[in-house]
Structure formats: structure tokens, C-alpha cells
Image (tube, rainbow, N blue to C red; front, side):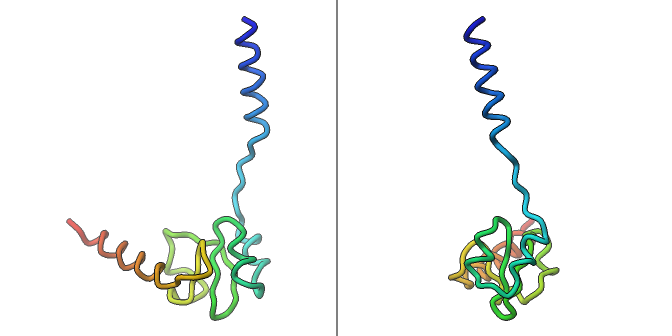
Length: 97
């Protein structure tokens, strides 16, 4: 009985202390005209290197970004070629039968 009570108390504390954090479009767009590192420090933001726009990155909607995929950076400010290769690989996967 005492062990069950301790378990319930600890579980409740862990549940209440962990918060779900979802990035909004405004959080990303407010960082437009900053640098890549500042933008990408916010989870799920993408950065356009050509026009310094910070936006909410949605991997399921790459056609609706404020810049060309070649100018887009996500998760890292270096290695834009990796994003291009990933997109090419994803396109190949979609044509496999």
C-alpha cells in the first residue's frame, strides 16, 4: 500500500513537470531577419538562407516554403546538400512499387 502511494506521487510529479512544447508559426516568423543559428534553435523551425526568413518547417509540405529547397536549412546551418539528397531519396522512395 505504501509503495503504491509513493509510485502514484512520483508518477504525478513527473507527469505535471513534463510539458509538451509545440512550436507555432509565429514563434518561427518572429525570428525572420535573424541568423540561421537563432532560427534553428527553436524546434521545428526552418531557415531560408537567401532571404533570411524563419518559418515553421513541415516535412510533409515542402512545396509551401518561403524559399527554394536549395536555400532552405533545417536542423543545421551547414550542409544544405544533405537536404537536397534527402529530398531526392524521398522522391525515389515514393516511386518504388
